[in-house]
Length: 286
Image (cartoon, rainbow, N blue to C red; front, side, top):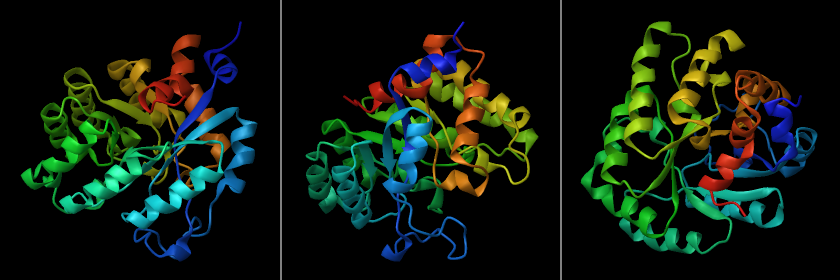
């Protein structure tokens, strides 16, 4: 009998979260210059890995808070068949940038935006009234909103998504649970449950290996992955590699195999959704 993972390989597989970058562009402020990932990563690096693991397409996500980054990614997308969609960035604090958002929205591969909320000191930033214009614009233009934050942002994302119920949102990296703190699991799990039950948000199983400093084994990650699948359901959960950030802990193939093991308890149809069909629906990939 075929496993769910093998079944997923027979349908269109989509990596719902990956990056390309060139540090020489100068706007990756978070990247340490001596980090092993502080070099150019482009399609020529990822294509063999996608082919080896049966991924037909990807969602390319911004990694720098500049309009130049979005332009850079859209150029790559226009030249790269495997890039299905691009999640970019605009300045949420500048309403005049609605023209940039409208221009990006006209691009066939542009799908939404991701403000780097995890790096903003003000936890309540997303709830500021002066930002309402951009959330309304995301809804009006039928774009997506990638939620990048930490467990301390759970309640605010809940408020935000209830305030903008028509906005298509996805929680990136399971909102980065604190894997080194077992006493924090219950708070994170309850916050994720409330988001799943009260909002229409989706969730990406991605970026988890880099949230652990020492141990990212199946035993450590299993409670988090299983909880997300339990509360959101496979129809609202999607796999993402977070490559090349994942290389800080493991190889692309290691995380793909681990994600397959952690979802092996599911049936064929459910696992196929996580490895492609859910992303196809959420990001409206043709």
